[in-house]
Amino acid sequence: MKFIKTIRLKPLLISLLIPLGLGGAVGLILSLTGKFAAYDELFQPPLSPPAWVFFVAWTVLYALMGISSYLVLTSDTPAGVRSDALWLYFVQLGINLIWPILFFWFEMRLAAFIWIIVLIAAVIRMIIGFWFISKPAALLQIPYLLWLLFATYLNGATFLLNG
Image (cartoon, rainbow, N blue to C red; front, side, top):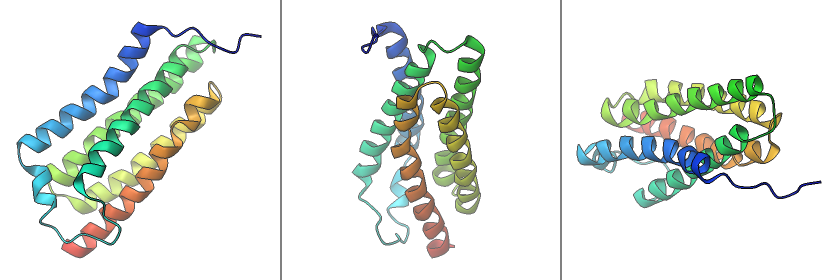
């Protein structure tokens, strides 16, 4: 039985670059336009971390997304099953990338709150899809789900505190 899988560098790098690049691009645009800075002026709910924590957390979470997608992409599962799971992955990634635009750019905190609940549902569905292909890929998404639950609290509380 083969326990160690050969790492295919090009698919791994592409798998990492997609979420890190897209997430980084959205973050950079919001930073350059001052949209992140406006968040500091809002009333913050209890347990709100300092701004640098968000950067570190999202970098790690996007890297985990990339590794998970790589594990699914390179699995021995039939192509159609992999394709379905990766479709779920890209759908949740798209939903993920829209959330900061709603929350920071448009300052639509209630819409962002509803959107993040949709994102959580998409991530749960993705984790289930990944589970049947690669249990490690699915388990690597648990920190993401937990962070989203925390972010939902922050989003909802920020909406309530700031109207």
